[in-house]
Length: 554
Image 1 (spheres, rainbow, N blue to C red):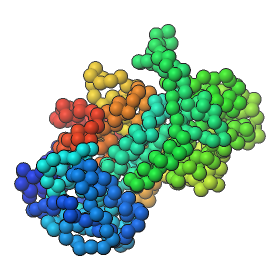
Image 2 (spheres, helix red, strand yellow; image 1 turned 90 degrees about the vertical axis):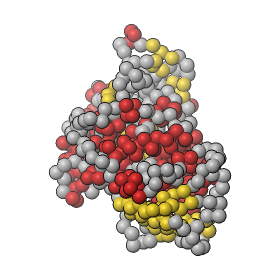
Image 3 (cartoon, rainbow, N blue to C red; image 1 turned 90 degrees about the horizontal axis):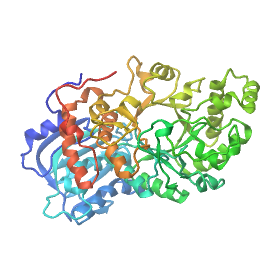
Image 4 (cartoon, rainbow, N blue to C red; image 1 turned 135 degrees about the vertical axis):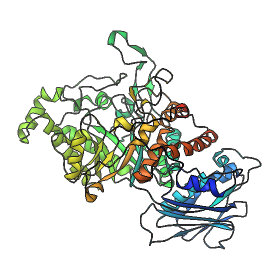
């Protein structure tokens, strides 16, 4: 059961020490590790300065986002200087003695604000806290009139529980524009999440320009029809026969990466293999088992035609991954590995010869061979791989990071993987799939199915029970996935992602023993006022949910 107790920590202290008519309230998500609220407030004005103890590019990035919002909402931006008095200033100092690259200390007094962090990333997170401490109008895109830009006096020491706090977006089923992707990154950074998992390839579309293979986007980025409505029997299906698609040039990607870097967000690209490959095989059918022809899929699901593990295919994929590795600075590349039917491989002469040549037991071990070969190649490029938990089938090297999603199939396997030395990222479908319903299906837009209300997201514990302290370190963190089969536009994506993403942010940030759903609900109501100012189309169903009992599923 999720405990029902009064508001915790900061929220309670604030109510006790700051008058009720204050223009801001200490409703922070994620909740800080330690905080104390004092009487009084600091008011930001046009004469306030930002003083950087180290005037580096990263430090400038760390404070720029707050300054951008002040310029839009308050009508002024703060001068950024390298030295200056601490009075009427936001003074940002790097302190190498602090533990944790994302930790920060924030001290707000009546005459000024002091921020300490080990790295500029910690300074950035302190700035996001200050944004939430300022009146909600700080999130406006236009100048707000008559607002006192006051920050309550607080003392905060904060650091995240997990190093990986992510949000995924599938742009292959439905394409999202470059500017929409940037907005998505902006929002996850606002919630102190640090990783954007960019799902770029699928059966329904290949979204990334590969210069050596232009047909991947000329052909593979477009489909001639898309399923309308529910996935029903073939004779009952309805189709939208409008040609649909889009892709990102490598210059587009560089813009997105530069945008993410300024928000201290790591972008991890996903290039699906060996399955979910129909769009690529439509463009280059010679890398299949049958030779095609194929058509970019307009139907959702899992398809039998996957990459054939012959030498020519590996050369093709290595060329693609070379460009991906050169484009994306992340240490990780996600290579998929999920939902790869073995039907074609079982009937393919080249596949069976590969099994014999490599001394493999069966097609499952052939997939492991496939993944291991790609991993070895990427290691030569200085990259590590992440794969969905199916990569465990047939065996996987301890150097691969596993993304756990199949709550019905592999909980024991993921614990075994952890104990075998694999790092894991928890993204279980029963708690973290945001293509599932978040409220009564009778009142919500059609989804792929499932039911993941926000209280269930909040109830999830990423670290499995029974691990040693050393084993627990291999649980890197928590991520939610947004699959877009039934999300035809970006507004729909935001509606499905928020406010559930706020629950992901808090689960990834604070210790389990500090989590309290009642407190989170109260703070979330206040955060929603900020969403309103931002113009986010978010789901409001949790406001009417029963607070009597929330069962925590294990």
